[in-house]
Image 1: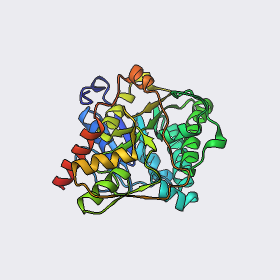
Image 2: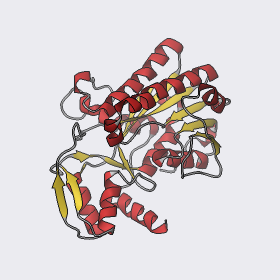
Image 3: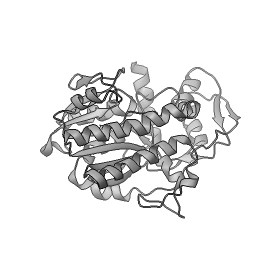
Image 4: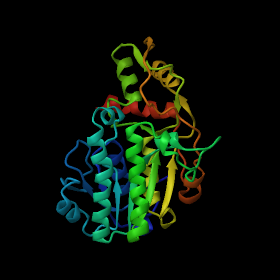
Length: 311
């Protein structure tokens, strides 16, 4: 897939909150490469694209947020609390960032008459879904099964998207990310932690049995989907951007040990309310966006290692 060709016919001015972060910075790069004019709303951050415009606006400064969205046709809302450990440590702050922050972006978009708000959500919400076998975007959610506060904040943000559509006519797209990895990822993420341990010759520490699995998705593949999601076909849709193949935590460790160093593996207590992984359909993203992940897990880890060497 070449995101540089996707959507060039309809180049527009788009905003990205959290565009200096791990996923956001890759999204900015792909939007710029596709010919869009990009304004990044982020109070700071390391990863910047010289072709984008940057505004050091805070989500909770409504006047600054309104001004930053002036002239934009769509906004990707990626800013928020993403580290589940940070969420568990300070749930009130996470609720403010992920729920109130989303409401403020929606309100700024409504007042600025933007055509669409595109929300970064997560496949963690499927842990609360009801159903057997492969789950889809229309699988019902049982709020009693939400578990982690992080999941509750994301479900709340998704609900706000639907309410603003119903009450104010604000179009939306919800993008439920698979578990992302790749260049620029936070050191706290499991793939980065395992790689760092192996590079340092230290044991790899697994929380729980290591049998829990997730469909990891390479960050460049996710970024490509964002460019495609500007298509009118994605308006008022919820789309799962899931990885192609389930990978267990033990398999991550084995891949890292094979590519870096055969360090020992240690097991510790499982994390409370951890996402165990479920089978999620990628049919709708393929159907509406012609998108599916193209980078295998091992190839993605190799790319991450190559990137680390260049830093």
